[in-house]
Image (cartoon, rainbow, N blue to C red):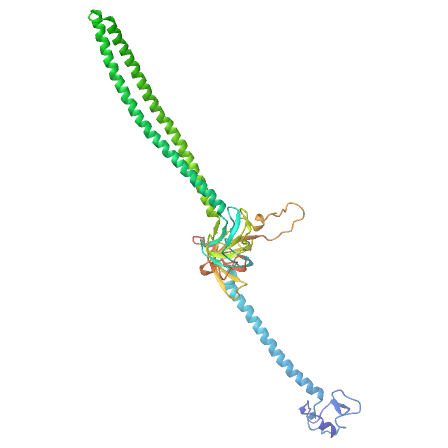
Length: 426
């Protein structure tokens, strides 16, 4: 039979004992059997034994069987995917209840550091540039040297002025010593004048007594009286000279004070000149790395001009801007995990150092004014300063300005914080 040669396998159909296949008819089109019945074409007419429950399967039945097998495999894959998804959801829920709900996360965070701008305190042409961009330096290393010849000349002039004032002061001291000797001399003159006055007074008294008795002439008495008066005048003159010499000491003392003040002024000007000479050498204030170098050999550097910057080698921190709804339980000392885009897969440790006293918008140049016009509520962010621990605070892996993500562990409050800070977030 042609039909039987084109069929691949046999299958068992419903069979009613003693009745054969009831109501089942097949038709053939172009030599292929279909499951649609066709008038006048029955199984009996095809010559099949109705007592045998085996009929030939159609090609459509073969395709349906393959589709069923494929659908069975797809169903198994779907079940497996569903199991994996459910397991992932359950695992996430377990993690969130056990640990995740204690962490606050933000990606609005950046590494910071005390970047020092190097600028000269004096103006001048740049004589030497001793560093290049991205060069590591130590505190005290010479970075830039300005032309110092003008400042050295001024310094030498002021050094000479100091020496002149010191000489003036020394001369005043010498004059004082000389004046003290003059005073001693005048004191001796006063003493001599006093002795002469005493002798002349005695002669006057004696000649006056003798003259009254006519023992001596009147001329002798008058001479003795004149000598006494002259001795008194000489004594007054000597005393006046002594007083003048003593007053000269006061004048010398005033001159010395003036000379000392002038000396101090000269010394101050000399010290300032020395500072100006020292300022022509720009040195690294801290250990770090040179960046943003603008200094060029021979260029004129004005006072305060930014010539280069030094990024500190240590002491880095992170400024993280958390939403106002996230910082309710924040305390200083809480542990923080830092992840940087530049170092995927690496986590740095830190701790909360402080929380800003106001939102970031309040410190902006133009704070938002919500009292006018329509109002749209915007969640504000509060800057939180995070200090990096260990080697993370050193320049190398992290650099100021890098974007990072910060996660604060609320289970670790600052020491001394109330236990209420450990209340779990529902």
